[in-house]
Length: 138
Image (cartoon, rainbow, N blue to C red; front, side):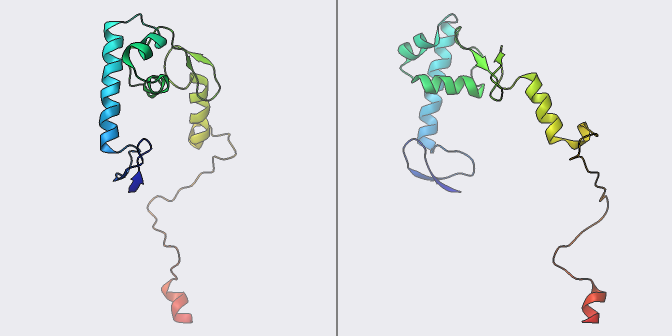
């Protein structure tokens, strides 16, 4: 897919990435810089990471939110991205995960009105085609 890089606006082709190869490389280098700093300074606060590495706060926060950093600054607070509940790690709390599972899977909640049972096992359906009998009648 042809797209523009969200960082430098350069045109590139990739089905998923929003960054061009050059910006992806730069971002990975910044990530490694942050990761190494936190590894060598495990009690660092996020402000110290930003100042000492020169990486923007929003980018450090993005690395944390994506789950790319296994060790995070000591003052980082995780919150559920759905309800805002405080978390020790992760992006979504257990209650919201359960709610999403029940909403997304009708079989998980058989009493749900949206859980209509459909059994089309072994059947092939063609849309927009008429049967031979109906074509011969015309």
